[in-house]
Length: 374
Image 1 (tube, rainbow, N blue to C red):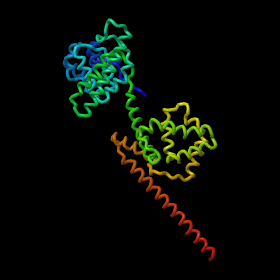
Image 2: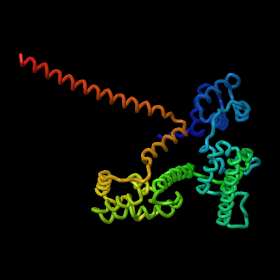
Image 3: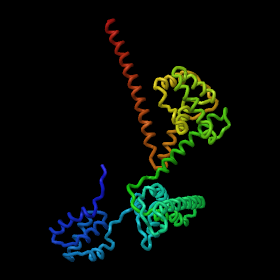
Image 4: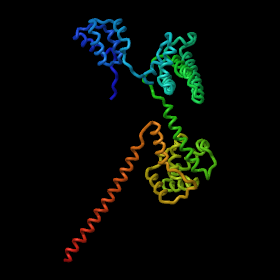
């Protein structure tokens, strides 16, 4: 269930009825300013009103503005809270400093948030537009200037992280947040999370797979990981998939011979199928019947295969990647080890218990036999 914070216009009428019952007269706009300052915290609003009533029975907007001073609610803003403020149509004096403050909420994520969402903004006219040009020309020019600003921000960010010169952060804020946010000032809908982060994670995973294939094929191929990615994967995928689609009976045997020729195993076949999906969309693994895939797996496991390079299991690689991701996120990996030891110890005790039961049965049988002999 998704819960939204109540707006000031919804809280104010209810609070006015409560204050009238307590004989405290407060103007509607004054009460709404209190609600906004406390972020809709009803408990804090009631505490403030109870404290102010001891001194005065009526409150107007100016009285509330003076009294609020340091009584506002302290809170931390996140990127999703400030991204809409970046694209506000605000060109009042000091707007550059205000928008650069939004950048420092999270200086590593805010540039990605701006770049992800600036095209979805319903752009309105701004003082930065050329009044002599048409509306479409103004939008195209804003797109061009925003793209140039993002490029400049990437240059500043790369140099800043390479040299650890964090004094460049204000320049990064200008190029990545202030300029694009001002060029595309307007109304925006629901902000989207940066898709670049997911693509970057996929890129790292594919890079690990390409390096693993390079090592596995190092005896039969002198190509590096980039050559395998660009030239060999499309052809290998065709040779390892097309026979199973065209010939359901003998296709598995042809694929196994191809794997043996390049010193590849069943896990390498899975990697090539996954990495090659982006090359040929017409030929898909879904076109292979489930019976053919099952027969291929059984046939491969039944036969012996001489691999020229000692390799790591794909499952081990995936588990290692997951473990590294958990360690980076600060997760505690000790629980898995404890679970493994407890399961192994419990299975040991189960086996031991079975042996004891078997021994009891055998001894019981001999006792019965002795009684019969007597």
